[in-house]
Image (cartoon, rainbow over all chains, first blue to last red; front, side, top):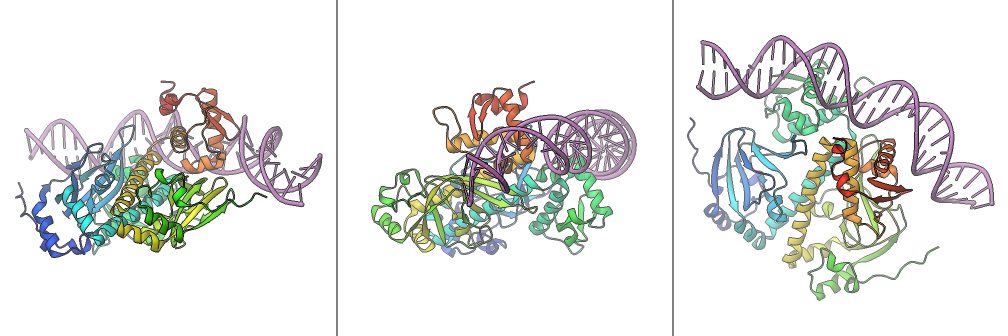
Length: 235
Length: 235
DNA sequence: ACAAAAATATGATAAATTTCATGTTTTCAA
DNA sequence: TTGAAAACATGAAATTTATCATATTTTTGT
């Protein structure tokens, strides 16, 4: 069994400058540090549950997270991903509504929890942080609109291609051009709203078309321009 | 030709207390009034265009608006609706990104335009307004997530039923239980991401099943519980 | 009021996608 | 290590949904 990692500190947190907390004064950082809690999560652990209330936000110190809803037939729908430096749970906290989605780790992760009172204090005292949150929310809303249009209008093959590119942008490629995230075929299906079998078949097609290379859950992007217009390949 | 209506004033605006501007002090309302512009739009007029920059937000004094994107095949996708008292364009303004969607009137409408400088001034000076915007954005984000799951997982018949209920909640029913918005079959199709013919067929089905009554673009909801679980009607 | 255009309607067919069945491979816990 | 469970894979059939063709009705501009 792995040992629990040391409690990370915001002051020395490597992902702080990439995060929404980047412009915060050193005094306030100390406040956050003092009020926060920090936990290690194994792969697949649920962080919070759709429908519950939330009393703070989680900041991802390390790891990868999926945010998902359960549809009416009990099927998981992945809404978005989060990684090191990202925050999750802020939507429900700020709207003061129940959580609209659940979150679970995709690999071993370390998350810090910052209580509501602290967040609201910073929001009040720090116009810069406040504005960052407005920007974050409105950016996310734009992304969501694009997802809606794609889900409504694009066929499954294109949606899969899109989501591979989205995963590339979110988690980046390693030196071998592998997407730096390992998802099951079922999870891929749950991003684009299709059957697992369809994803399996389409990944094979993409491989045959030399657009990607597949080795287990490792997906290598060989021809990114090709993926951006998969519908026209045989035009 | 109809006469242009009088310039409305925020101070006497009937929809202000229902809007995001409801808690604003009288002095600030006067400032908004002084900086705003106001215009009448005919049915079907475009208010702003996806991809452009925006320099303020529009507040709907009167009328009904659709917000939509154009998909890769040129097909319209309706993202959301707005009505009297709602604001539009705030997403692009706050994210400082280009507009992610276009807006057009669904009927004759009057809209006020409040310039960016004024909005940012209120955001800075008025924590209450600021917090209202955070709430609005995060609420919208929750709605978007639910739309994503529905589009990804529900069959067309259920999506149409859902969207009729959404339209009911947004625009309400008149005394005759008619939904207070008149959309073409094509527009209904563009909400749920399906073909116009499918909407036509399904509306007939709903009518035959006594769930709704249809007379042109007037849709009367006869059996709302039935619509909430259209998939199980014949179970 | 009238012609043209747009919207609505419906059937037949085609295409996309899911479901089901079944087999193989991989993963994981005892 | 091994046996069970989960994940992956593939074909065939069924289902859903889109497309095409065509007719009718409604709306709109002149």
